[in-house]
Length: 239
Image 1 (tube, rainbow, N blue to C red):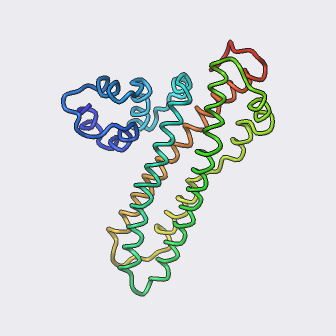
Image 2 (image 1 turned 180 degrees about the horizontal axis):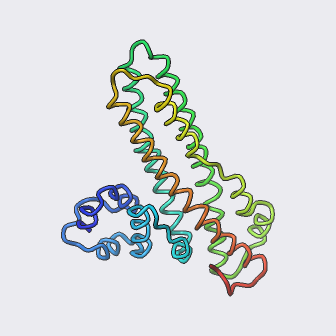
Image 3 (image 1 turned 30 degrees about the vertical axis):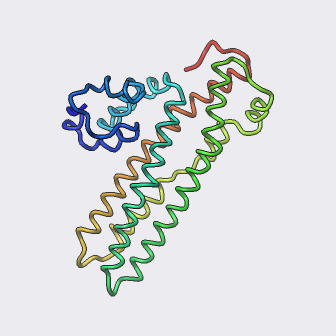
């Protein structure tokens, strides 16, 4: 596992999302995954997709249980809300504190980011309280080859297709925020601080894009197949 970090240190926060922390010793990836009850194949595919931006094996991902995918997505949510977003907030606060004549401009920047945080929190709350529990119930019913009337009715009223149509693009506002910094805020000093904020925004945007890809290209298609099977009673085909 230590060799993985030496190869690409940017994978550290991704590894942490699986509940795996530093102190690997001489243990292999397989040994550490088994110790933490992590599916080795899923873990490696996630790491490879972050290491190589052109690698996204959606067919392989669709062979994994949606439970693995949801656990991973929820850990990403926790990373955004408890670490990445507060870090950017602190940097913007520091920029406001250090500014003088342009303080009003920087306060607008802070307000814009606060609006993004509100949108992100609402997005995450809806997924974790409504969408993910529904998906887990669908997979449970699919594996049992038995669907309750309550779940069947819910599929009819609010299937994954409706969620897909309503799935908002939470990285768009980050793009706007980056543009404000790049194009419209004249910075005579504090260049390094502004560059640091931009760097963190780019990293968060890229991470969230990967997060959305996992939902749209893997999770949603998986659920569609399971919903179709539950409605028709034909369980022979999945992905």
